[in-house]
Length: 417
Image (cartoon, rainbow, N blue to C red; front, side, top):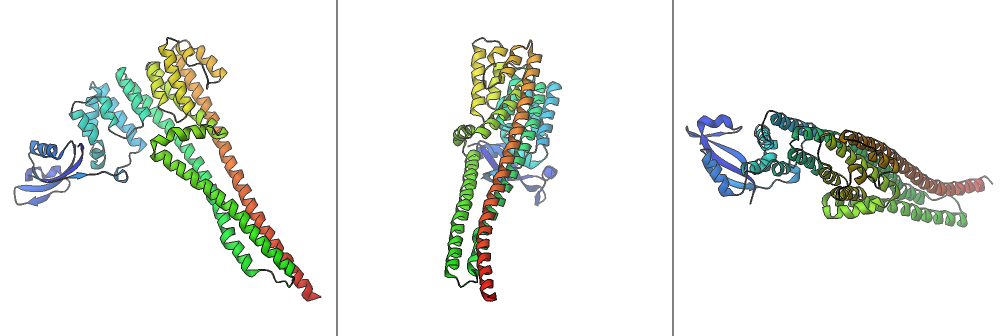
């Protein structure tokens, strides 16, 4: 079974400079270790023999997700740029990819790329090998594959880099919104917890200094009601927070749940509009860049349908492809909902691929602006919820405290009399 293997072996002492850590064994050999990504242990032994090494021990390595080296956006952009440079120099895309991988000096990154290199060694093509890198999202891979098929890989790499930058900007804004809502939820829960388990027990313990049995009973009743109402608020907020957290975990770890969750979220008025606007903005921006690179619109529709989490936007691009295959011109094929009437009119008025790209980019910018306004409203609603929640908790505490103060005032009045 193809996988990672770590091999310990003897190498001639003259080649010790090839290894970072090599232990001398006698005067003729050094002991060293290397990682391989090959189909079997026998294949590893064959590769060692081919290189003139003597195998000592070979063990399979299971690379867990937390052990994989994180690949940053800047490195991925340099990686794509290096491939584009070699292609412009005359190499085939597969040869360029192999040269870039073999030139990687970082052992952690090189190990991560070994599956792709193994595909190339077996004679696989650029598309198959690039998918095995596991450093890029499916949309970016689809952009590059379409560019390769059209013979415009350098142009596709430029579009892919633009896609990476736009995705980074979207995730940055989304992360800020999520962080803000998370902080608000934490503040709300901590306030409710402090009232439920600190302030109300303190009031209950100190009671009121009054000999009036009715006032004491009224105070104790108020304490119990405050416990119930604050507990209801606290545990409702906690249940909502846990539900959202579990949904997020299921979304991240269970691909089969994603489509169902997408459909449920899309039904929520504000969330659905934000997701739809964000999806249209992202996919039309990708379509505009691919149109500039003269990628066929049918291929563009396939790529765009993979670049969104919105079921409605995904269905839009799939239906658009079907309309194109039926022979409709691009302006007519794309002119239907969820695009607005103004957007449809702009698409129908374009004259060539350059104008089509301009119109699609204008749609992307408009929808991105609308999605930004929606996220701002969502943050505002979260802030109002937090203020309202805190106000209710505070009013409950003030109500109980006022009862205690009334009892204390009555007690002082009786002493003065």
